[in-house]
Structures are given as C-alpha cells and as structure tokens.
Image 1: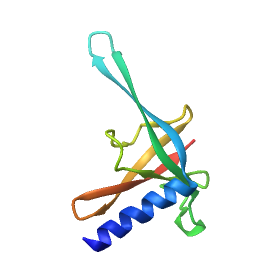
Image 2: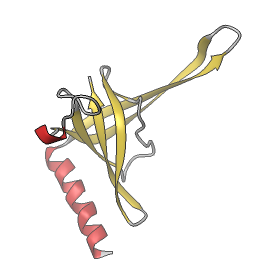
Image 3: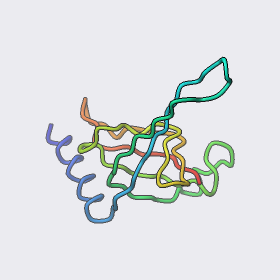
Length: 116
C-alpha cells in the first residue's frame, strides 16, 4: 500500500511538473455491409495530462518501434476514457500500443507508443 501511494504520487508529480494538457480523441462508427461504408461515426474526446519522451536507441527495431515513434506517458487517475490503439493525440499523432502502469488493482498511468 505504501509503495502504491508513493508510485502514484511520483507519476502525479512528474506530470504536474513537466506534463501538459493533450486532447485524445476516438472516432467510432458502424459498418454497413449493404453500402460497404462506415456510418454513424461518433468522436469522443478527453483531455489528459501527458508527456512525450523519446525511445532509447536500443528499443528501436525498425519494425515494431520506428525511429520516429515516441512514448507518451499519461495520467490515469482523473480520466474516464482509457486510451486504445487507434486513438488520436491532437490531429496527427496515433496511439499504436498501450501499457498500463499499475500497482495492485490501481491503474496509475499509461505508457503509449505513438506514431505520426
């Protein structure tokens, strides 16, 4: 319990001191097989506190992680939306992969691989 609270405070302080507000959006729709098109698209947005960091050179393999990819650390405790692959950060950056920072059952933050 003490370690969990400490980790939670460390992530919160890091993002408070160095993070900034980022809008993450998710567009969903229903595929209509008769028309072959996606219809009734809905865009959901939420503002997260986050921080972009570069990958270490040894993490870049050119296939799963490209040289232009970046990690995005997001605070989780004040959000209702959970980031998913395919979500957009701003208008051009896509979330590729999401990992939880978790202590016990408590999700403290997310580390997202981003591209774009």
